[in-house]
Image (cartoon, rainbow, N blue to C red; front, top):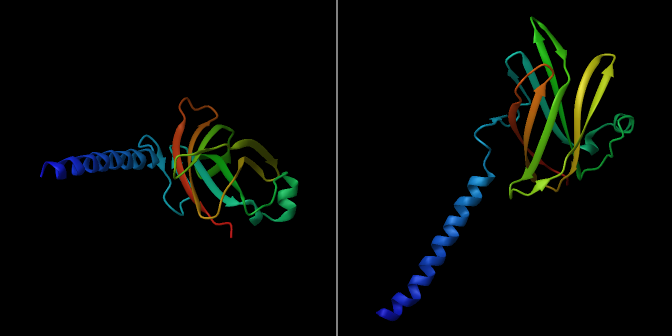
Length: 167
């Protein structure tokens, strides 16, 4: 009987360690509770007088002339994250500048680098924050986004999740 205990105890111990590691992994891959999550297929939310619109797509979906005009490489393996901020004044919404920072990670919590740039249009007036990064087929990315609209003192902390299909 003591031989059985000697064999069972290491297996029990290893099972507990593995279970603990699984719990830690699931906790780190969940969205930060301090951030406001955008639900699936929701791309726009109001935060006080500011409206933040977020959209993600693979760059092969962009028309060639648009991609060329903004110097975006068209590829099914490249994603583009587009963020706009508008300020609501009565019934009128006006684009506003903002400080935008993004951390992208996959479901294994591997960080992905995102280079962002501001694009301003004059006719009609629009301000976009565009970031590009490589993606794989059926890869889900979680974007932790900090947006501080011009004149605001605190950032709006949001989380946006998107699954990319490249095949």
